[in-house]
Length: 137
Image (tube, rainbow, N blue to C red):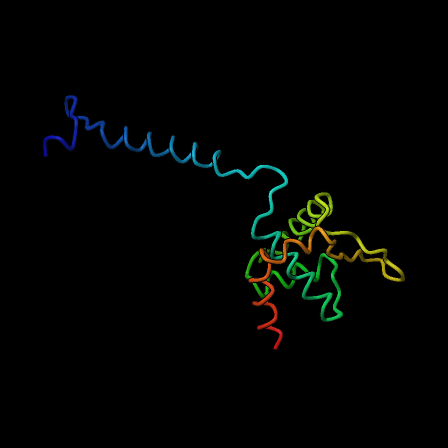
């Protein structure tokens, strides 16, 4: 057992030290995992794919429909309170120029379209689009 544990008296401090280091590493890794603002992650790619799919099939592209599709097709944002996260992503995508709000004619709901800049991301959201196309058959 020597070499594995450092004993001071009857207290073994190595497991405590390892636990302290583990907690420190977890805290450091969490700060390093934060994405910079303006990045386009997989959730945003899924949202763009949903809008592309819905526009191609003459379906609504408002936030609630997008959230329902994310839940059923990709199993993300399963909690009812998560709908606000979808609206947050939509706002960010509009701000980055990848989406635009469509003028609501008669409807009260705000619908979204993909901009030309957003269409340039087609290579990145195409795998998610294929999933949606397969599920709609």
